[in-house]
Image (cartoon, rainbow, N blue to C red; front, side, top):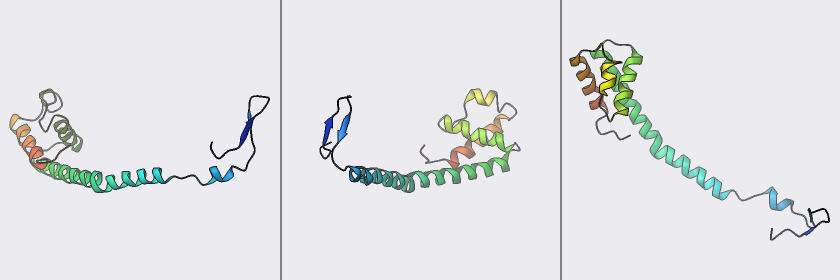
Length: 123
């Protein structure tokens, strides 16, 4: 507003008395560009490597699960997901419901597989 010369009108509006097009045509977006740069930098330096590490560990766990116990891929995926959600331990409720067909030995083997695959990984 410091660069705009204006006066109030009789109808409660304003009349601009100078050329203001340059004030709006080339706005300074340096701050927005710097923020976007920091976001991309954070993603490339931290988020993407962390996600790749997770995917490698997940694939390793899936491979070992499939070689240990015969089960559908979706069930193995769920097994890993439930363990991840429960601090790398299979929830008792899930063990009794979704994985009731597994023997206790099979369930223990799968838990060890997932725990080893994700050992040292932080969520």
